[in-house]
Image (cartoon, rainbow over the protein chains, first blue to last red):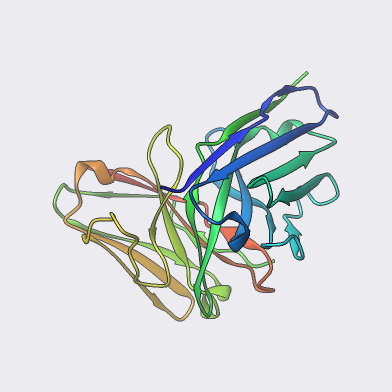
Length: 122
Length: 108
């Protein structure tokens, strides 16, 4: 069974930094694009960033561009999110999600981790 | 960037049928996928590519797509279907992903 396990969340002061990790297992990690998605308290899902199989293509939501950096290590089956200049509105549960492409115009996040809580507060 | 919009909430009587919709111009080009999120749990994929159910999703869930609208239908809703449902699609430039605001489904 596909497994995605996030870690690295915690409490950080505004302006601070955190590095999230997502450890993948039971599938060929390098065969999939990967994503980070977050959910603020009581709010909906927000796509944060994506990275292609070998890191060639990287995209960010406008809300995090210039502050967050996504990366991956296929040798270690790991996905990362470096978060700098954190703000109160970055407070959320952060999920990593595997992206599955199954035909023209068809994409889905077919596996999700349980998430890691990031709280930005003074 | 393009958006996809959903009705915030809908209710359905036990055993009846409910349809949730997702609208956006980018849905003319890209299929939506649908995610179920129960209280205090992570999202689960329930529909993709218009009308494809992942393994393990009950066949009371079905999907469709037309023009700028994607739909998720629950036929014979059960108590365990009470959850938030989110649609997702690619943005108009095809590089980013975008979620709808979610629809809270209450089973009465």
